[in-house]
Length: 154
Image (cartoon, rainbow, N blue to C red):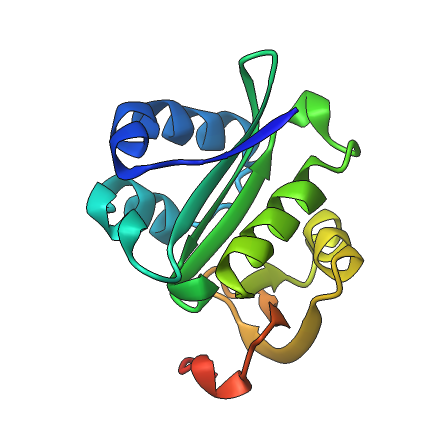
């Protein structure tokens, strides 16, 4: 197993592969807004504080990715290969993102029990419930050196 932070150059070279991976393995839970964000993300934005894309590979095969913008206050999502779930990959990626960023915010639909399990496993705290972009009840969760005031959309 290997978790790798994508540099701007590597992100530029692998963006289309990541988008295909998200389409195939995202179970239609990744919002269109999040996909548009990743598609349009200028690679050099990954050099700015609070932004990161991490991938999890094993034997050179992509098994997971996490993307975070603005520590997650703007955008964040996690996708794990369908055949590699329940192996701790989501937890490892989320922990790695938190470790590198120092704080992490995510929005998770209340009916997405797998993602909520991952968040609670690493000690994230639910601090608000809002109506998400799909209209579903959605929890705001955070971990690390977070402050509720960082999230302007509540």
